[in-house]
Image 1 (cartoon, helix red, strand yellow):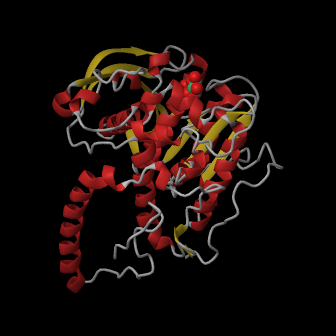
Image 2 (cartoon, rainbow, N blue to C red):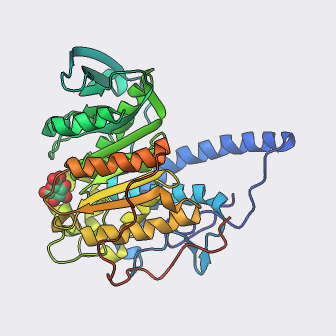
Length: 420
Ligand code: GTR
């Protein structure tokens, strides 16, 4: 791949026009040397990255949802084989400006069982653990596994919102009856939900600019490290979910960790599944969220307050990082603060990437009425979508019904037709 210079970060990084050769014995050596050079270059890049991202005043205004296929002036991505490189660029851009950089983790995760029980209603086994994660196992994170009776391995739903209490018994019963393990962990033990970097994982990685959403996403990945070692878990069927700020974290986790088969943010809105550029009355703006919760994001995100048009990406491109893996968002039309309209638009825009990759059915959405919560109906929809996508069961409902069929368009582009 040839690196070429660009003024627009993230939009022209690689020369996508060069065909990718299929490796043969003779090209293997070249590929090996190439990998070494790339690894060294990546190291150098990690150090210079912070300087490499231009400040907001150097960024052009983009008055629509940015085109994820645009890789240079009048140049668009044409072939699927180049998506991986484009995805990596978008990931670096989104982490660099919005969530902050996340350390690569190599420390093992260990689990200490602290108690166990049996759920009388369902016969499910309930096990409590403390997970020890991070360098030296210094971060202790509570985890509760509810495991259906019977023979696994089972698909698993991981939710990070234990800080708000266990999922309601009715929902747990539905989850285990349908043959899924429920894994609930406390993301706030990974990083506190307040402006305090002296606790959780932060002190173990000085010099990283990540905010709480990125740290929570890191926590999801550490839970995956652990559950992947269990014989009762089907590693090909890992689902991450969460509500609101927990939904934003689940979406980021699913976007980054390719072990996740299905990502389900609920009511995630700003900084989650809804676009920053598409705002309706009473929805949470970039300014509102980054003023109240600056510690959820990287410090450099604040420069986009009042300059949202200069954000070189929008949340549909975070969603697109999940592709071609399954993505399903659940929301309420009454939950205006979580930007239900902007979430529909973000869904439609990110579906273009799924379309491009030939898997439009792998992205879905579900809207209900009612308050800001992840309730029985949201979980029932999650399970229906998961049954379809991961278990091959014909769905009883459709997952592409748009609650707002007449919203004005927010972007003029579409997936390139010639995708192959
Ligand atoms: C709100 C915040 C939202 C959402 C919500 C929640 O105060 O503005 O972005 O995260 O909290 O987590 O319940």
